Image (cartoon, rainbow, N blue to C red; front, side):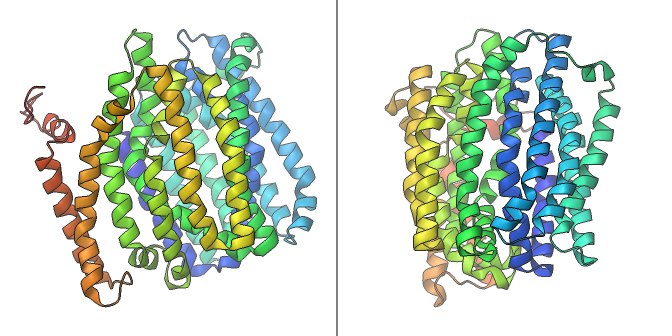
Length: 477
């Protein structure tokens, strides 16, 4: 259910990106990129009432739920008030008066989103991913259609803001229809200490992450141009395709599943290693193939006017190979009650990474920023895995044993596309036909390596086939 939801949202998001990138100019999209970067920082304060608190809590009472919504609503109000008051100043700083109406419309969306976040957290706790999917698809698909329609109608950068409002409104209505427990919205601050204990760390992590994640975009938009901010934003969007396409569905299930294991007294070492093995079997090959096929992918998804992002995507895709554990580290540490470890990790990695990336972008340009990620992402991965290893009692040889088959699959997947690029005479600037041939070869290499290495993914595939049950092609170990 979760994976199906993510695929539907991905299709709608990429369709929107492909169409809107051909309607609006990089300058117009740059306004929205800057606005969303500022908004991300403002919204991080809402994480002090994190939905993760509701998912991981052992025993959940009505007071917990009502208290979580009360705090989230209050924090949203604070964020909106500050954002609206600061919008004229921010517009002046960026010489973009268009930011003022953009923030006014977006502010209304945030209250609707708070309601949706609460309902989705409760549904995820109960593993009701079908209902979560219905809400998310309604929000995403409606927003996609509205964005394209409004862009065609000449709403320019405001297409994103008005479409968000339309999608959030419909999603909130559906959430209430699927979970019509209106008692949730009665204000209370009962059990606030447990919430603040968890939310204090979680909110601080969110603030650190959002500030230093948005910092490069904000500085590029202010010191270089909105066009540069838009170009770097689109580079990251393309680089994150494998993450969103292959891991998005699993990630939504990981925290509820790990939390359920902990409540039952199970050890998370083996599930974590198994998850790493499965994740990298898809993630690493996809990133390597994306790096080879960056030019045709950018051409298809964004259009020729964005082709200068292709060499940036090639570098970013390689850097993201080191992020293989990122989507699993947060849920596993939250599940074992190590939220403080996550905060310490954030203090170590986010400021340094954000400052280095920003300096590289401002003083060295977009190419320097992309190459800088080859330093910052491995650094983040090393620190994050250090905390997880300590909590779960993992050794480096345990991780290596879980990953080596995936590494072989990644190399085998990239071999075919690299041969096509070498023989094409045009380097990586492949035609669409050549890119299609390269993709077929990549899939063949992936499948051959999957079988030859006897990857654990083989067992998972067999289990999913009706009639095979829990049969396995792998010998007993």
